[in-house]
Length: 177
Image (tube, rainbow, N blue to C red; front, side, top):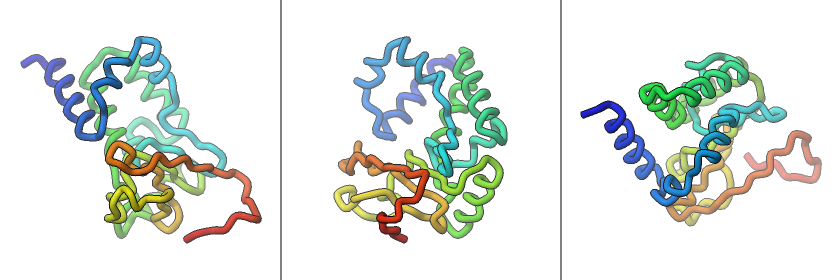
């Protein structure tokens, strides 16, 4: 079986298992693909380090936002399906900040790249809390407040969470642990 066929089938299977819709792929144009490939994969926005997924695998591409973004763009700019697959695997890995050592892992990543808090999607909040999707009402702060999960699991019936990330403290806003 040719490797490109295996890769497409594996991607399609992974896409579907993670809530991806066939219709979304069918509507994707070359312009969309070019735009997506040019976006940053990791961003330091004020004190928040924005990641797609709760993984440290970004560090396989470098240890600064610039290095990581440049390397991901290089992968996406070529036609090497194996490199694309490895990119997909890395960017869909999860749960690096959960568990007993989660706060330490988050702190080490923040110390290296910058920021005070990691904000991520990809891992649905229900996988951390055991709640049903209908019980999710907002983001989840965990790992000693070093990480904020914002994926409500919309494809599984959870809410679409829109989270305001303030870079200056609002003295009128209550802090919730």
